[in-house]
Length: 92
Image (cartoon, rainbow, N blue to C red; front, side, top):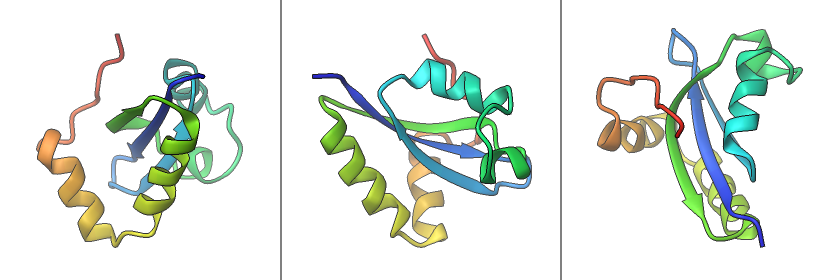
């Protein structure tokens, strides 16, 4: 089974996007290059500000759905627990 990742991207104006993937590096690269049509490309949401990893994709998808149901305020609190300055997270 592949690991799963839930990630939160932010724009400069702190518009948020929550996604899930089994290839975090590849997916973030795609967002940064504008290769994924839609919300993130339209609003230039490319800064990785939060990541959680899971042993499998089903767990990651369940967590993504949970986070998407949260209020914006609750999402911001989650980000700021581990990334109070909203700095770009580095991938290995």
